[in-house]
Image (tube, rainbow, N blue to C red):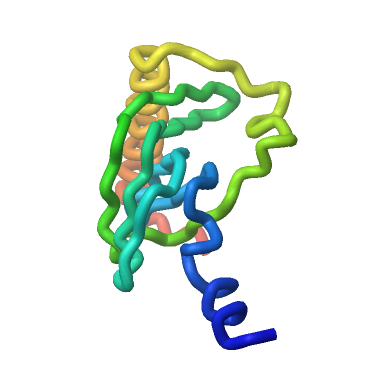
Length: 125
């Protein structure tokens, strides 16, 4: 194995022109084809979709050509085109429906947090 082989195996170059899933620091999941990258892991994805998942619901929102700053990337992984991307129980919904479900989930989480904060004085432990 040459140094070039070692370098390419640890580089994003092996993923060029392949369909990837990119997980961002803010929790967003992007799916697209890697077209370019640089030494800072800034990446350019083509035909990018933002995949939003709430429970058993999901929606793919088209974003087109997308530039991602490297410091926001948590994980990059190649998608296997031979396999189904999502389990059978997942239901595809419109962008409007998934945004509504996302807001309801966020509101429920906020309510749970505020209830917990109000009950701290009980010190149940």
